[in-house]
Amino acid sequence: MLLTVDRYGKDNDYGMLKHQFGIMMTDPAPEQIFEEYEPEKYDCIAVDDEYVQEVAEMLAGVSVYWHGLDRPESGLAYHGITLIPPESIEEVKNGRFQDNTI
Picture (tube, rainbow, N blue to C red):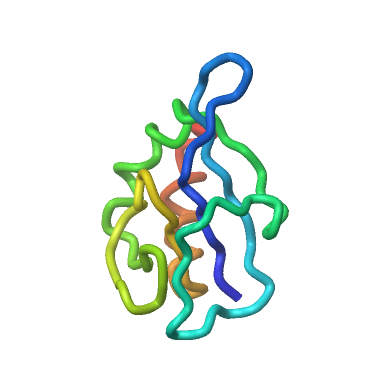
């Protein structure tokens, strides 16, 4: 199971950028590419950009995939889709929740 961070921000009624976070119930196929904005597909929750900015630097070294399993990277794809593999979730939780910013 991979956690997907759907990072295509959409403005809300107040003009604040939002980022969508959701959980994929099945692992993506190796050839599957994620380029569409589909927060409803993964029951995503919205997080204000100001909070995401605060933790983006802390997550810069976390091993992830951008847009598909064929593109290993590190850190969040700020204007794209980041797939966080199970082996990186603990690192995300530790880096993120240690300082209680969100």
